[in-house]
Length: 304
Image 1 (cartoon, helix red, strand yellow):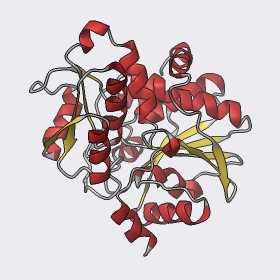
Image 2 (tube, one colour; image 1 turned 60 degrees about the vertical axis):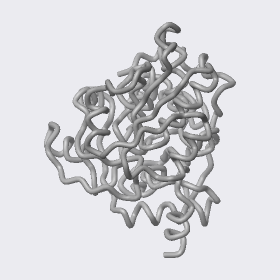
Image 3 (cartoon, rainbow, N blue to C red; image 1 turned 120 degrees about the horizontal axis):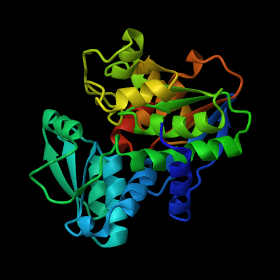
C-alpha cells in the first residue's frame, strides 16, 4: 500500500498542474474522466510527481521511460516543463496517435520489438540510453500521483461502494486502492483487463502469478503477457479482485461512451465500463483512464 501521507503530498505537488477531473453519470454509473487531462490520460499525475521528486542532478542527462504511449506523453510533458531531454522506449506496434503526441511534446521515440520493450519494464532500465528512468508502473512516486484520483473520488462521491479501474501494469489500481482503502476500507476496488492479456485475473484465480496466453489488441494501454514481479504483492494487498472482458465488450463500451456520454475513450479507457455488470453495488465509479485512440480505429468501432 502506498502511504496516505505520500498521496496527499503528491496532491499538493500537483495542484494547479493537473486537472481535477469531473464525475459524470451514465445509466446509474459514475465515470471519472481522466481522458480530459491535458495529455488525454491519467498518466500525467504519476509522471509529474515522480519527476518533481527526482534529485535535480539526476535529471541533467534527461528523463527516460518505457511506454505504449500515454506515460511517454506524461514524462515528455514534465521534461518540457523542466527544459530537459526526454526519450521514450515504445513497442513497435504503439498507436500512431500516441507517438505523434509524444513528439509534439518534444520527446524522442525509440521503437523496439515488443519483447525488448517488456524487458525494459521488467528490468526498470534501458542501458542503451542515458537519463533518469521513470518506471510507468512500479515507481512508488508514480503510484502516489495516481492515488490522487482516489482522494478526489471519495471527496466528490462520498457514497462510493466500488471502483472499477483499467489494468495495464497495476500502478493505477494500486494508487487508487491505496487512497481509498486508507480512508474507506469497505470500498471495493476491482481491476479490469482485456481477456486477450489478463495476468491479474489469472493470478487471483490461482492465488499466485501464472503463465497466460497473450495477444496484442486495439486495447493497447492494458493487457500484458505477465505481471511485473514487484506488483503482485502490492496488488494482492489492496485490490479486491480482477475481471477480464472481451474485446467486443471493450468496443461496445467505447461506442456507448461516445454515443451516450459524448466521451472519447481508448480501448483501455473503456475497460472499466465494460465490466460494470460484474459488480453488485449501489454506487459504482468507472475510471475512464484515457482517450488517446487513433481516429481510424475509433471510426471503425463506431461504424460496427
